[in-house]
Every structure is written in structure tokens, then in C-alpha cells.
Length: 218
Image (cartoon, rainbow, N blue to C red):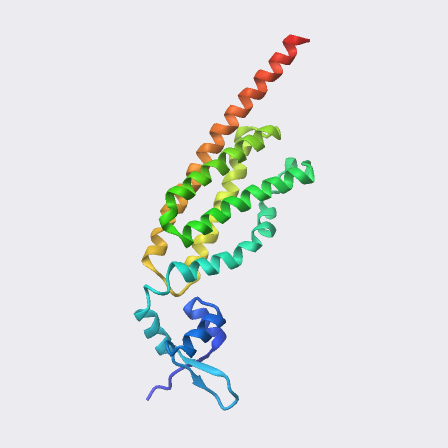
């Protein structure tokens, strides 16, 4: 007879894709069976965890994943600074750097919000467009060419999409609807990019017109 494999609460919570606190609650409620060792530690059967996953696909979906994403979003600032390495970035004032990081964080948080509440897709898209416009006008005002501005945004877009894909793939608790949200996430980012380009072109045209007007008045 094959001996069943028993796992610690830490490993069990990783398999389920939830926090240890959540797993304790489920155990206390009787939703997940646990064996208690003589030392008072909880142990979980790997086979029973798999059965629980199969029976609870609808429960372990967007909300648990969104909690995991939200808990990790705080690292965005540290990681985002790794892709903002071009020479021009280091010549910016602290205030300008902070503003760019704030815009990137805001767009990232919108994606997290969408994963939490996919029914708010239209609202998130509209907010992402506004973020894109602000990105475009800000980078134009900083004197960054459109090509470089798009490159900055694509770094941000790539990081966000890679992060979302990784966190979804790493979770053993997989939900079809979660993976179906990826095209919508891409669409949201693309809408922001289109608005960035439009706003940058508009800001650059206005700036050029102002410069010409200044030259005429001299």
C-alpha cells in the first residue's frame, strides 16, 4: 500500500495558491482536512489537496489570484527602476522620476483592479486611456522623442504582462477565466499606448507652435 505524502501548511498553501492564514480558516471550517502531529503541527495529504482543488475550481479563481497579485504589487517600484536605465532618465529631476514611477504604478494597479473585478473592464480601459495620455504629455514635456517614449511604455507594458503571466502560471490553482483575462489585459495596455502616442504628438505640436510664436515675437 502506497503511503500518502503529508505536507506542511506552508507547502500546502503554496499548492493551493492561498496564504497560510486562508488555509487555516478553511481547515477550521472543515473545508480542508488536516492531520495534527503529536507536536501540534498541521499536515495535509497531497492527494486530498488535489481532490479539493478539483472540487473547488470556481472558488479558487479570480479573488485568490487577485490577492496574490495585490500583495506583490508593492515591489513594482523596485523592479520598475531596473528598466528605467537609459541615460536620459538619470538626468531627470527627482520630481520627474517620481512622477514617471507614479504613472507606471498607477497603470499597474489598474491591471490588478481589472483582475479583481473583470466586470469593470470598460471603466478600467477608460482609466488606462487617461494614464496613457498623461504618460504621453509628460514624456513630451520632458523633451523625450516619441520613439523613446513608446520604448519606455513598452518596457512598462512588457513587465506588467510578464508579471501577470508568471503569477498565473506559477499558481497550481488554475482557472480558465483567469487565463482568458490575458487578452483583455493586453487590450487595456494597448489602449493606453495609443493614447500615449496621440497625447505625445499633440503636446509636441503645441510645443513647436509655441516656440515658433516666440521666435516671431522677438
